[in-house]
Length: 421
Image (cartoon, rainbow, N blue to C red; front, side, top):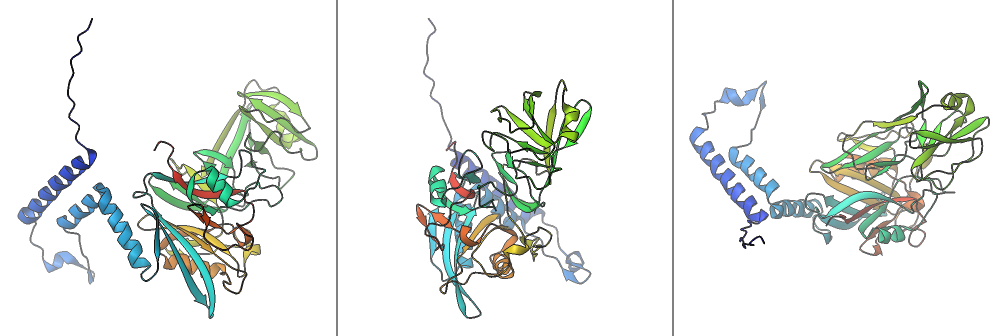
């Protein structure tokens, strides 16, 4: 029998390592700064009559220390929010998550605004992601229900959807899985482990077989043209929708076409159904193998989640509203509004604006864009609004939608504890 010898393990806490590393870096940079810093001349700092300032090594050391120590990141975020919303009550939802209520006046009339700001490095126990009303897309539920089903501390209504069915209209990705494709290449927010990006999203998809490459126009979206070829996955529901006139459906499992019909086919759990004009899809019939290739433009490598809306509100630090380009002329006027954006410090900003009542008249898209820019957003987009606008925090609806609790929704954005925490 092997002899068991107890060996004592000495574990150095991560925080201690961070502190030791910070002190070491600080000492090295300080000594380097004092011993080796060259003499500066006026000509070194003046180029074309513009004065250039460079950070000292001590400032660099401070920035490194702020990145290494969670307490410093938290303090910087807290101070940033305190200074931005000076004089307003700031509610602590969780570390790195703040809720602010404000009333602004436009032409002498009030507008109630609820704001949530999140710093993902401070709130590193939480994840920001979209969530749907159900496992299949043809479903709607109140925001409170969706939030509670996802154990969310914060939730806000998401992108546009088809009112009759609840199917999201636009790009939706959850946990790197593309649920629905884009409509009119509308702008979307990409959520990464390290931050956020916005851009107008295009779908690049095709199905290959029999030496043919056939374009797929969209995924899990309602048909817009009879000539479109659409792919339907189990997220859509049990069966694919009806074929267009002179159309056909191909059921695919494991790179094999397993059934062909002009009638709606069952969507297999481990496959999908392609629906479109027979004249195009019959080229694939009899293929020994078919492959589907899907990507987006922008590629957004390592993106985890995508939620779409439109139009742009702020683009690269400038107010930018492209309503016509995104075919969203119908959402003009003064209405309840929902928006999302992010700042140069990578703080995510969620905004819900009440409207259509005397105590809060709502905002135009121009006013909303200016608000998001004033809140420091370098990029921001409009989400679904009107009766959909609703914000939830720790079990409570914090704004006042026209319908109590807000209308039933298709998709929302939630802030929830990470699954591995």
